[in-house]
Image 1 (cartoon, rainbow, N blue to C red):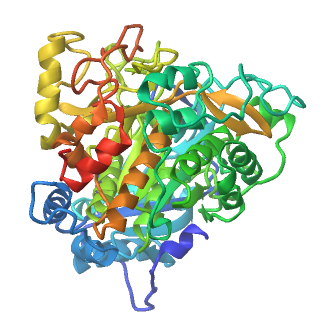
Image 2 (cartoon, rainbow, N blue to C red):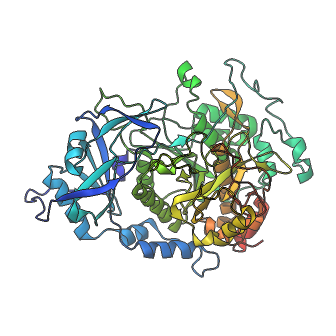
Image 3 (cartoon, one colour):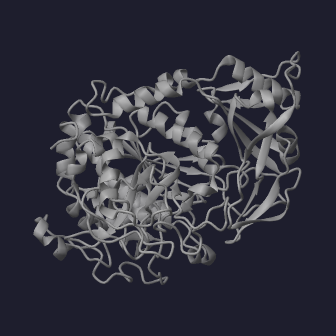
Length: 608
C-alpha cells in the first residue's frame, strides 16, 4: 500500500484560481541549527524530487487534549470511552480559510497536484528542489552524516507572512531526524553453523512453569530465551481468549522488515503452535518501502541488515500469540542516489508513517516502535506536531510504546547543545520524550533485575516537552532522592522518561537462519508491548475497552503492578548517568511487567 493512498481527498486545480491577493511578503518561519554530526557536502540537485508535507494549523487542540486525558484517566467517568478516527478528524480539521489560503499559495506557484489528508490537516505535494526553494525562499543542500548517510535539507525556510498563522510545519526542511535502530551488539554469526552455534546451551528446552524462585535456573543472563521472558513476566500460562478481536503492530524503517523465514524458524523452535503465523500476517508498505524476503548477501550480513525487524517480530509474536499481528515498513533511507529522480531517500520517513496511520480508521490496539534519534536533531515544530499525532492515537484508545534509546543520557563525545556548541548537556531522545507515548527502558539480570549496564538505557528529561501532570509526583519524588546530581545538565521541568522497562540485554532471536542474541531497548519495547496486548485480551474478553494511552493509568496506580528496579544507572556523556531508585526513576521508570498484577490493575482502574 503506497503512501499516496492515505489521502482521502485530492485538491482539484481550478482554472479560475489565481494567486492569492494577500501580501506575498516573505518572512522566516523557522530556523534550526544543523546537528554537529551533519555537514554540507554540496548543493542539492535542482531536479531532485521532494515529497513535501505541509502541516496546516489544526483546530480544537485544547479540546482534543481534554478528550485524550479524560478517556485515559482511570479516575474519570469517561475512562475508556475512546474517540473514533472520524471524530478525531472532524475535531482537528483546519478552518476552510486555512485550507484555501495555503492551496492558493501553492497554485500561485504552479503547484496544482495536492493531496489532502482525511483530517484535512496535511497537504502533500511532490516538487523538485528548485520549486521547493521558490516556495520557501530557501536553499537546499546535500548534507552528509559522519556515518556516511545523506539527506537533502535546509537550516531555515520562509513563508508569506499571512500564512505563518496557518502553517505549523513543512518537511523535509529543517529536520535531521533519522529513525535509528535501538538494537545493538548482536552476537557474532558464523554462516553454516545453524541452530544454537552462538548459544551457551541448547536452543530448545522445555521446563514446567517454574515458581519465581526458579527463575534463575531457567534464565541465562548471556542468552535470554522466550520461555524465560514469558515466565519472568508471568504470561506463559495465559491463553488468549479473543485474539481475533485484539491486535498489536510494529513499525519498520531503513529497509527493515520481518523476515518470514527467520520468524518461522524462531517460532518452530520456541512456539511451534505459532509457526503458521509467520507466513500469514500482513506487512503494509508505506511510501515505496520494499518487503525484501531474499537471502542476505555478505554486505548486508556485515551491516546486520534486518536484525531490528526480526527482533521486533519474533518477540511480539512469541509473547502475544495468537493475538492478531501486523507490521508496517516505511520507505526512505540514506544514502541518496542523485542520478535517480526519486523521493525515496529525501522524504521524512517517520512523518510518512505517522500520517499514514492517522489516516486509517482501523489500527492495532498496541503499537511498538524501536527507532529514535536525539531530540535536538528535529525542530520543535516537527516534534510538537508528531507528538500531537500520538495524542490523537491516544484519544482513539491506542497504546503507543517507544524504546527509550541505547545511549543512556547521551552518547559519549556528543553531549553538547546544537545552538551553543560550547554548552555541555545531557541529550534527550525523541520520540520517546513525547508525553503521549509510553517510553520503555532496558534491564538485565534476574532476581533481581537491574538497569542494563552493557549499554546505556535511554534516560532523561525532554528539552521540548514540559512535564505532564500525570508524572508530577513521581518525578518530584525522584528529585528528592538525587538532589542536585547533574544540576544544569538537564531540564528539571521537562517530561521525564522512561515510564517502564523490560529485558533488553542478550535476547535470543533467529537472524539469517541462525540463532543468536541481540541487546538494546529495541528488545524492551516489543516485550512490554506484547504483555500489554495480552492484558487487553483479558479486558476485551470481558467486554471492556482496551487500555489505550497507558501513562495516566500507570502513574495513577498501576505502577504498583510493576516490579520496581532499584539498581544500576543510565550511563552516558562520560558519566554514570541517572541512577535507579525506589519508585520511579529516570532509567527504568516504574519497572518491569508482572502480567497477573497488571490484569488485576486493568480491571480495577489502576489498583490490584
